[in-house]
Length: 176
View 1 (spheres, rainbow, N blue to C red):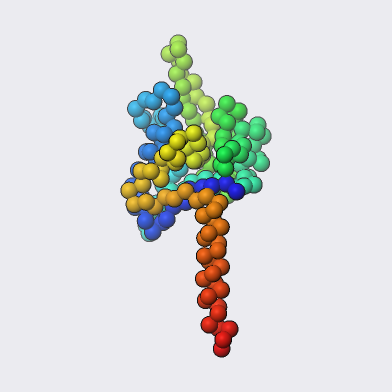
View 2: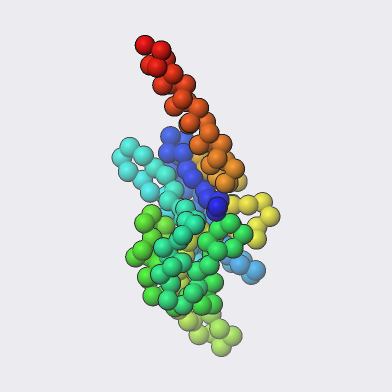
């Protein structure tokens, strides 16, 4: 089972600190100041009148994006779904099939040694900050602790707790 980050909508205040931390965590080996051109967080905070919460990839086990990718640029690695940018052709198929709207295609601008700029469309999604020793940057910076990394063991514990509540809740009715 894959792990994933989930947001508690009751605690999220919509500050977008998670977006900034995510963008900064993915600046690469030669970080530059954040600009509109390189601000590509892998999550998006959605706000409505009554609720705000970041939308993140759910790291599906049978990921529709992985199955639909014509170039095999999307793969499972270390309990998460990753994108191999060198193989991504920016076709947007992954974006169309994602049931959560967590996949997007962004245009990345790179400068070459001769000063020319090249643009390339690529898939952009939460990768759980794979390779970052401290784990997902969004969780680390959330001022209200609204984000949590859910691991397979956590899901099993939640399921057991719900089953126990259901069993205890129905027990008094059985005695009548």
